[in-house]
Amino acid sequence: MKTTNWGRVRRPLRQTAVAAATLAVVFTGAACGADSDTESGANSAETRTVETEQGPITVPADPQRVVVLNGSLAGYLFDLDVPVVAADTRMIGVNTDGGEFPPSLEESATDQGTEVLPAASEIPVEVVASYDPDLIIGGGQGFTGVLSEQAYDQLAEIAPTVLVPASAADWQEQLGFVANAVGRSDQVDTIMDSYRDRINEVASAITPPDGQVAYILTTSDPSTVTMISATAALPEMMNEIGFEADADVWDKAGNPELYGTGDSFQFSLERLEQAADAPVVFVIALDGGRTAEELADDPIYARLPAFQNGNVYDLPATSFRPDYRLAIDTLDIVEAQFG
Image (tube, rainbow, N blue to C red):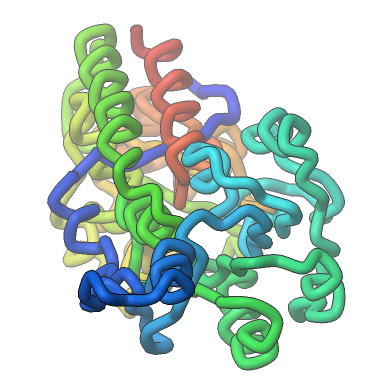
């Protein structure tokens, strides 16, 4: 049985997707003529308008006190060198109680002096207000994304609030959206180039096992099977470094309902052998889920071709819906294992 260490994953860099996700920007007062007074000119230099699903939002041109309501978005602000005064630290695939920053964010948060926003079952609106933010960033995928949508009206009374749409399913789209919201779109290409360079390095350094790949997402419920769609972030990134995803896995599973942004689906154990018949399998264990080694002790999974051939590997939970930093971490893990 072959397994990897915990790590983080990212999706292939698609500049066209980022460009499509980038919001339209209108500079306040841009249409004013040369006879605009000094005060109008100053205001136009200080604010911008971005288009969001909640409508046009006037935001600071150079925000200096940002509060982030989704830990999965905080890394983008740090990568763009935007001052973050407080952030929710909860991230998909990271088992923390929300009381500390996960490893991928800890150093940046320490350098900036970013404080932990208390984790709760709803947005702590009064605490957010106490930080006197000039911009609030929320939305995105997962539980915390839903919470900020629910509290949007209250948050908008505190400061301009921009919610990343849940439909922005990969990190490239999320990065483009956030960068536009904080006026740092000019830095996106540099991040993308770094990612592309790393993709090429890993692709040249590894020897993937032969055959198509299926991705099993294990949860605390062993009575059903959850798999990752072939078009989701993780399989697409792995495709770029030589791991060909089984494009028919959803059809083999009987075309079940897709979850979230369509990146996963669930079905009964009776269809497991039909759906997960690829010669290579990656296992991603979410909180309470089983690892590849643990699945191998289950006779239902042990019959799968990948388990019979010993071509089953673990990837960290953070590889499922990564940000830029977690994608790089996963590439490092894959390179170490298959290099």
